[in-house]
Image 1 (tube, rainbow, N blue to C red):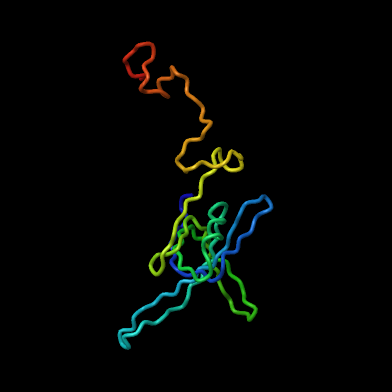
Image 2 (spheres, rainbow, N blue to C red):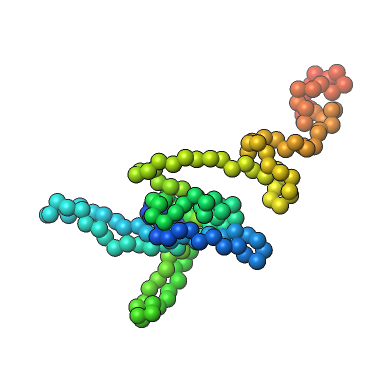
Length: 169
């Protein structure tokens, strides 16, 4: 959607991802990402931590299930998504707070201090909920693809139609 604010956050997961399902069976996961800025104090020549920024991130559907299966508390992640308007609330001690929320478009582990092993999940053929099974590769054509008519010049550009050597346009 035009006009939305897209941001990228690098930080650590505060908790294990919390996976839930809506009444309609749609997966949704929530994670909290904490990012603490560090800066060099030139007078003491030591690194100092700034105030941690906490962002609640939400992902839906297959991304939600992948996050819940892959990421754990403490994992350094890179998150890109759409920033939502902050919501204000009050703590039990009466302190006023605001919560940043991000709807995840992409998320993954940071490889700055770790390694990762990636495995591709097969796509479902025929769309979600079609029950058609899985293809061996996301780029495989569906097994039951409709066949084009033999005389359709647009579907079969290399085939000649009735001996004509002209292109169909």
